[in-house]
Image 1 (cartoon, rainbow, N blue to C red):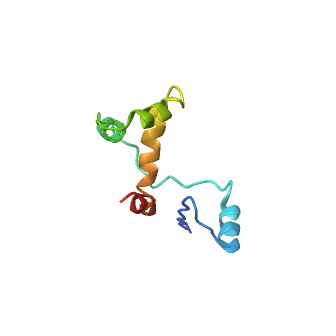
Image 2 (cartoon, rainbow, N blue to C red):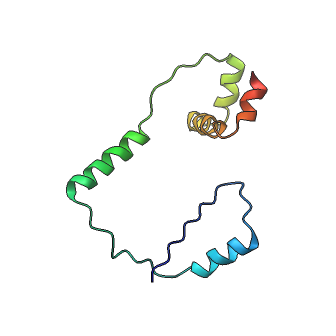
Image 3 (tube, one colour):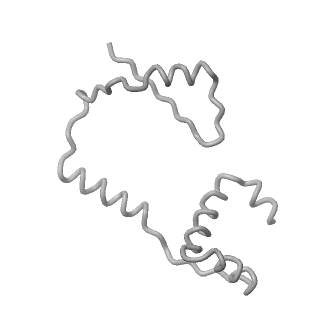
Length: 101
């Protein structure tokens, strides 16, 4: 008999000791994939297209003070990526946005 277990832990979650014990008990157990059919070439191409589309980024213009731009630039190469990751993370923290309104 197959047992399906689905547990999603996100950053900041505090799972109970019992939940952690259940997850630890599953560690190393083989996963039965016999009921999953192989993907066709067309399906794989579509998945690849969707991944590319999800990763695609748009150019965005933003007006900032010289002081702010210089502060970000002092972080060195890749500072725009840091800005992008900070903005992405802000979506999960509405309290950050409220502080700026």
